[in-house]
Image 1 (cartoon, helix red, strand yellow):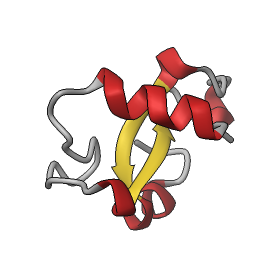
Image 2 (cartoon, one colour):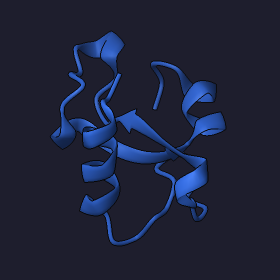
Image 3 (tube, helix red, strand yellow):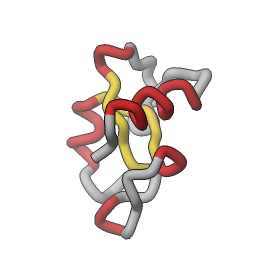
Image 4 (cartoon, helix red, strand yellow):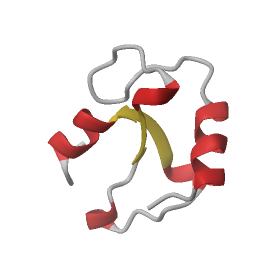
Length: 65
């Protein structure tokens, strides 16, 4: 997964703190760093491949963003 520093950088990259899955606002306490390109599809745990998601949304879509 993403390190704490990577999570902080992913959070800072996006001015709109919106979940990439459900498109609702995300608070820092709800934030889960998801992969834009899923790990199952070769996506790396690199900051550039991160996106903001709710933890529940991240777990719900698995390898199907």
